[in-house]
View 1 (cartoon, helix red, strand yellow):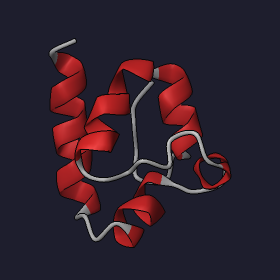
View 2: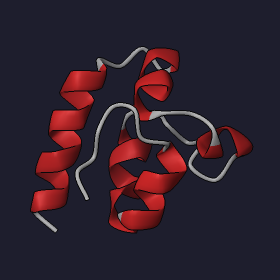
View 3: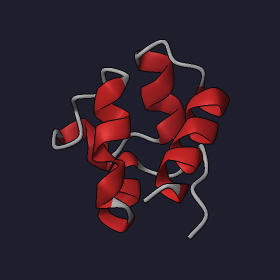
View 4: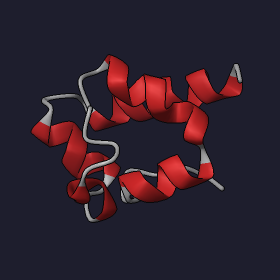
Length: 66
């Protein structure tokens, strides 16, 4: 599955549980909260003042090392 900006955080974590540390490293500690089930990667990045394209690139690189 290709990870995109419009994917829900919960869907990403469900498919790639090993991605949790990458989210936590940038302050996204809401992995288990209710917002994760309705918030896209892009929305979460904006809330946490993170560039969504840069984070997506780093996330994919991180997952490639797993």
